[in-house]
Image (cartoon, rainbow, N blue to C red; front, side, top):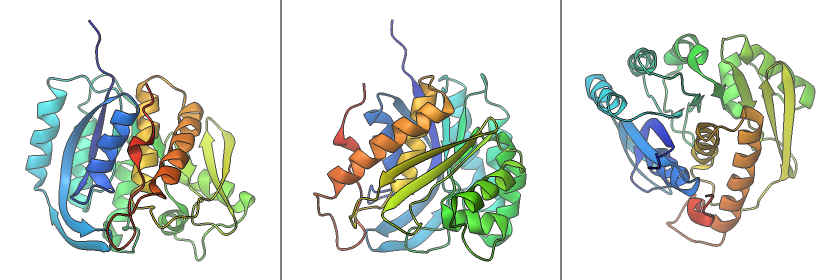
Length: 270
């Protein structure tokens, strides 16, 4: 009998379906994986922005996690919105209980795409200390990299981005992917530091307002490919290809009056 390849997302809920838990599970399904979820927060949001955030009690998060982990093998974990230092402590403790040492992909979400803070500044160092050493890969974008390292300006050259990746690696994470979508120019250049090697992934930027959930989708796709046994660099490359297809497909749709979602169901990767 076949068994599912499973991926657990630990993140907030986006009722508009563009990001968070909903985007993660859509992506897992598109990758041919079975999605599991632990919800850390409920949000009231739409394409115009985040209107309210309602954190889930940490004991409820722990109960969700343990109910799943006690019954279903987990092949990979994706972590998104956490919201507080207390939640970070809870998640770090729960990860230590996992059997099988599955890969853990940490999307370092500090704010929404429209700038709404999603993690207090005083919890950022806590995340670096508690969660980075447990992560197989962290996936900050350029603004997040700037905040995580306390830089005055975002790294803008290949040399400065590679230097930033090395500094992030010193926090204890196994690998670092710095996403370059916020960089200047017509190309999106992402830098992966893995096993003391740099891998660069470049693609032409896709002109669209429908980018809500881009970071969630990429990190979830990476987690899904790693759950299926791909190496880190291959998982990133395949996830980037999928993300670009989802962005292209999403550009042809109109949903809401603001920053619309990409289309995760653009292709079934079986």
